[in-house]
Structure formats: C-alpha cells, structure tokens
Length: 234
Ligand SMILES: [Ca+2]
Ligand SMILES: [Ca+2]
Image 1: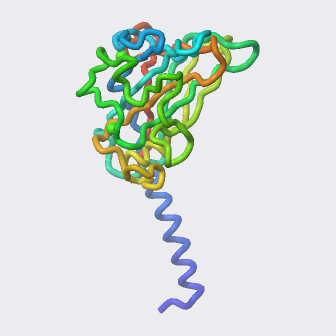
Image 2: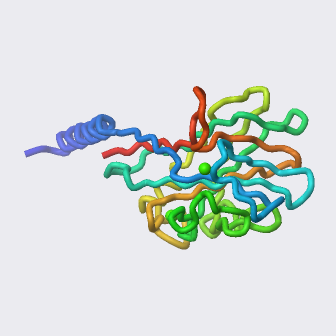
C-alpha cells in the first residue's frame, strides 16, 4: 500500500516514462509537394504549373500580382500526433525595396474549399479558377483568426543578398488542424476532409517587391522542391 508520498514518486516516474517513450518514437517525415503553380492577376487565364519556379510578387501597378499555390498530401503520414510541422521553400531570387526584407506570407485554407489537384490539375490552375483568389491583390477573406476562411499561418523574411537559401515557416497548428488534432483552429471544419492541404503564398508589401521560389519541377544540383517536414509522435 502506498502512502501520499509514495503516490507522488510513482506519478513522477510515470511522467518521465511517457516523455522518454514519446521521444523515442518521434518520426520525421519529409513530404514533397503534390502540386504547385503560380497564378497572376496580370493575366488571369495564364497557366504556370509546369514551370521550374514559383513567382510571389506584387508588381508596380495594382492588379499585377503573382501568388503561388502548393498542395501536400498527408495520407502517408504515420499514425500518432503531430509535434511539429515546417514548410520549407528554396528562394532563388528576390527584388526588395530599399533595405527592407522581402516577405512571403504563408496562408492555409481552413473551410475545405481548398485546391484539389485531381479536379484542377496544376497545369490548368490559373487566376480565375484558383481557390480564394481575390481580384484586388489579396486572397478572399484572408486573416489571422478561426473566422477567416484563408488563415494567415506565418511568414518568411529574407534579403536579396542572402539568396539562394532555404527558408522555413512553422505550420504546426495548421497541420494539426488538418489531422483533426486542433479543432479550434477553424470555425468551419474540424479537419481537412481529403487530407490534401493547400498553402497559398503571397507577398504583402510593397509594390515592386517579390521573390522566386523553386517549384517541384526545379532541376539541377541545388534544386530543392517545396517540402513539408512533419514530426509525428506515437
Ligand atoms: Ca508545378
Ligand atoms: Ca483539402
């Protein structure tokens, strides 16, 4: 029979055991993009899905804005809980304004009206059929809360003289939501219905600045396709 003190010792030992087991089974999985394509407000019927790069740029005049869409399938992730998820992008070039870093904002669609490349293959994605592509530069209903259908996840910032380099954005909360582990993240749905998540890339400010990112079609020794790195704990 254990007294109160004995009970505490047992509880601490139990917690340490759980942490040790969790760490020993943590598994990191790198997922390459299933589909990726830029769209442009400059020419909303043009298609760029087979290009080796993605353009994320705000041109000098309004309504000449390039954004990028990326899909990743979560279907091959092992069972368990998501501990961490990072979106990694290789930025090869940028145009910056004065000495301000270039920003790529990463968004996620959280109401299951996201891009399904089985319905719209990347070769046919354009400014008119891309999901949530607003007319006036930004995405339709983008914001930072569970009430927005396009949720701002995070941002990568860099200067043009640092390039090329791989940047990463923490997307843990979004991937947890997609897997049904973070229901509060969206007021529209408890998870991503088809297990294919969509990231939208946008350069928010200023006009004239932007960046070029390797697509999954990039070739060459240093080519690094858009990659989602997920750590799952069993
Ligand atoms: Ca592509
Ligand atoms: Ca989906």
